[in-house]
Image (cartoon, rainbow, N blue to C red; front, side, top):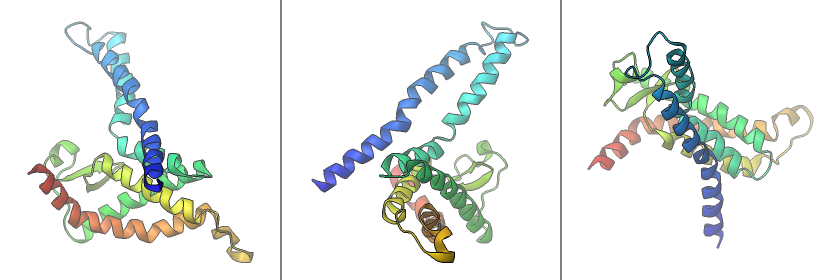
Length: 199
């Protein structure tokens, strides 16, 4: 029963970010129609507006992993959901920096200045960091990890000079070594997982 309850909690947390996708997709489709050169002149205001709004919406679609990370952390957190989402955002950035740093230090960075040039290399640019391309799985894993740690240590408080390191700050401190190890592990393990999934 405990396992079923956890699966239900996970599915509820997952559905949060997913519910936005149809609306985003529909809006992208609608505004893409206004950028069709067969129907709309490139110099028209309608064309420019379509391009402008589409760029806003594609920013969401291109960063689904980040949205899942925040959504799952907040959805699975039992208390202080806003703090869990904030820690998830910081965890996301720490992972990107750590993964990029390890790729750089081990001379594993693929050659390419854009995502188009990195296509097929197993790497991508996220928030300006060149990292291992895990798609939305990165957000799902990090979001669940943050929620797991959050639910276990967010209630811990310290006294005296250490009081500032309790609660959600402790969650971030615990996540630091975990994210570092995960960032290193994905450099070696994820390409294997990706290769196996293609067979």
